[in-house]
Image 1: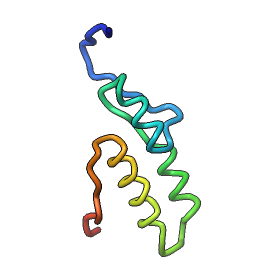
Image 2: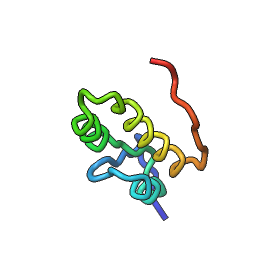
Image 3: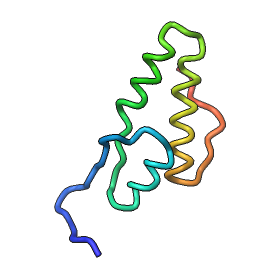
Length: 76
């Protein structure tokens, strides 16, 4: 049982992988995945596959959190 909070609760420390996000999402209103995406960008900086690498992680996170699979990203 949880106590209602006056504001939404977001958790984001150490969340990098879809399984982690799905696990913590049961206990909060929002999951923040910032550094993990920044790290992917840094690893792929200057490479043609950077956008796809970030998109792949975001798609995997969304699927883990909602069960909805996304097959494409919006045009940039």
